[in-house]
Length: 311
Image 1 (cartoon, rainbow, N blue to C red):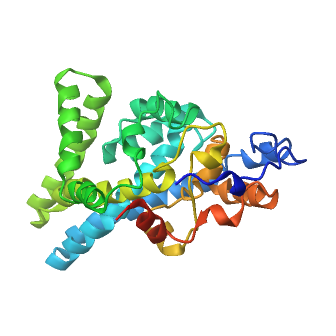
Image 2: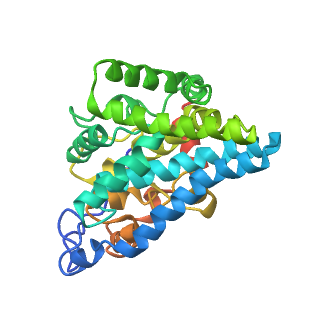
Image 3: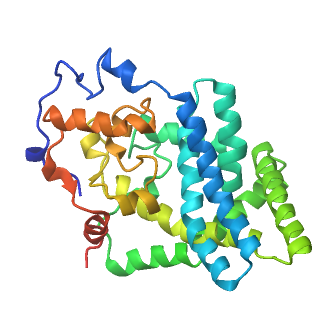
């Protein structure tokens, strides 16, 4: 799944990009600027969409409302996790304390993401993609894989089997008294308490089950599909075109699975200091320079996932 040498033109550096494809100053400074006020609005809207779906289901309290909440919460957890990823990169707010406070308590912990641990392993991922210290090497390697293996992986995600392993690890860390696991537990206890209160007051008992079951199934399923689309079957290389896929972005994919420009993933790996709003601009610079050619781009996520299966 790695592009051939004939699809990787040696055109760098240029007057706008250095030899590693990063923008040179002053363009780099412009691309790395964090828009604080706009990001405040983004976080608020993400929380309104995510928690609002469940609150609306509590108010309506009909079977179809709960079903719709379950389906939409798959996207809701995606919103929280992707913004949590942005905060892990310290790109949500320039004030690091505010960045980490929001990233931990409002974005990561409600969606079972261990913010500090995630930051450490994710930076290891960026230091040497697909290298010996790659934390997700087992997730990415071996593609394309047999069709039956691909289906088994997705079935484990969609049925909650993968989530069960995550919960076992979380419970182990809770029993060991590890701080971040206890913080996640505290946030989940607040969410459970709010759900129980809604049950006692309005008779709507399904808020927390919808929250956790949607995370355990739809989100896990979506997360694998997105992760494999980023690095599945690639190789270790200083050339990011060999480590990260390029997939054409569509409005539906961006709404359901790759919000906040996370689908412009090659640009993110070229310069992980560029906030999400500016990744399309950096991508356009890579294309304009001739370093990134249309032939390496998959026309859709569906086309990519089809290529992931060898039979």
